Each structure stands twice: as structure tokens, then as C-alpha cells.
Length: 309
Image (cartoon, rainbow, N blue to C red; front, side, top):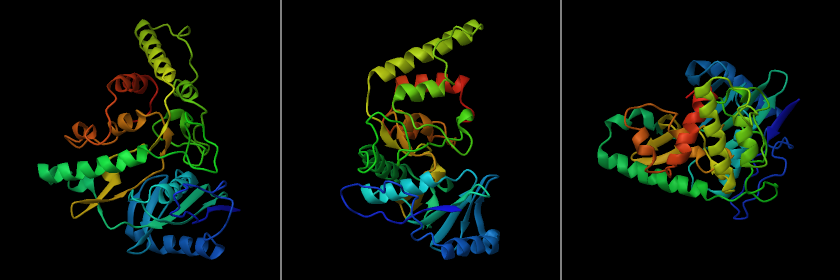
């Protein structure tokens, strides 16, 4: 049996999202599901992006489908949340989404935004053009980080979770792989303990250098937890390839599969490790607040626990 996400977001300022975003089959009808599967079968020759566990296929000039084993309904829920609560942030419009449990595949049918990845042109742009795009990005991410928790779903101020309060997904965290994802976590302390694979002390570590570094990480995590700051809504994978532009305008921020409510530093530290086009890392602090102390903390964590960039 397939689960589906209804297209039920509104432009209401109440910022409400469905209590159970996938409980209804509204719009992801049997006809829509079968039509999507048929379109995929006959359109694979125009696939825009293919990976072992996920693909994006253009179904028409204005519609695409993202599907695979590492695609999750939480991304569709994020698109609904942003359409409702932050309509000025340029994200693809969700048409419908559904999951085939037998094949462990999720399908998200959404708008195909008319724009090109910024990775295609960043190195060729003038300083003035870059400054203009960075200014636009600064406004977009300021609004994103100012979002409040949606009504109708109980999410604590410090919770680390997806837009709908459920699991997060991040392919860079090695023990987060699988259908269930990671979390949700009631606070940053739970999240940090998970990031350290449950390690609360260094008693079992014999290597002196590793022991010292992990101890420092634990202390920095606890210092961060002590500030008890609210989590903020975070894209989690800000790279040039996920920013679409057209005629000098940012027209789309895409690939929201790793989005959710995270500690404030997470957007900055993940953005530093998602794209290696020369000069891009130096620009990130111009549109996302810099967190130098947390970057040091994140570097320690990546050195011992993170699987990937």
C-alpha cells in the first residue's frame, strides 16, 4: 500500500501544516501514481540526474519527479511547510508524493523551476554579479532561519527534527543511513550524543591523541548545549548545485531532503563542506552567519565520526 502527501498547503499566515501530512491520498490518486510510473518508464532517456539510490526525471518542461530509495516523504512535507509559511522563499511547488512500500521507493512530483544551477556559471560571473546573488541569498536564508515552528505539530523550541516533527535524513552521517533516518531528538544534547555514537566519556579510548580530541569535542558540545538556544529551520545541503538562477536572480533553492530544525550553526558548517568550487567557501559567510567556534567543534566531529564531506 502506498502512502501519499496531499497538496494541502495554503498561503495562510497561521503557518499551519497537516498533523499527519501523509495520512490522506488526496491528489496522489491511483491514477496519478500509475501515470507517474508510466512517465518514468518512457522518459528515462531525459533523466537530468541519476544516482544509485535516487534519480530526477523531467516529465515535462514544467514538472519533474524525484524518486528513489534515499528520497523521503519528509522532503515533500518540507515543501508544503515552506509554501505555507515562507511563500517568498523560491522552492519547487509540490504536486503530489507517494511511497511504494513494497519496493522501498518514494516519489515526489514537483515543479521544474526554470533556472540553471549556480555551479554552472559561478566561476564565470563578475564580482558585481556575484555580490548581487549573495545579497539575494542572504535575504532568503535570513527568512528561512526566522521561521517559527508550525502550528498543529508539537515541536519544542530546542528540538532537532524534520519540518513535520519526524525523522531527519543526512547521508553524511554514517550511522544515520537506512529508511528510518535519524531522530527526532528532543534537544541538542540528545542530538550531540547521537553524533558521538552514544559516547558520553572517553574512558574506553586508549590512543592519547584521539582521547584528547574526543574529550575536547564532548566539552564543546556541552558548552553549546548549555546555551539552550532555539533550533532554526535549516536546508542542510547548501551547495552551488542546489541554487538555481535565471537572468541574475535566484529563482530556486532545491534538494530539501536533509532539511529540518537544527542548531543554529548547522547550516554554516554543512555549507562549508558541500561544494569545492574554488572560492565558494569564502563566500558562504556573506549570506549565512559565521560560527567560528562551532566550526572548530564540527571539524573535530567530522574528523572522528562523519562519513563524507
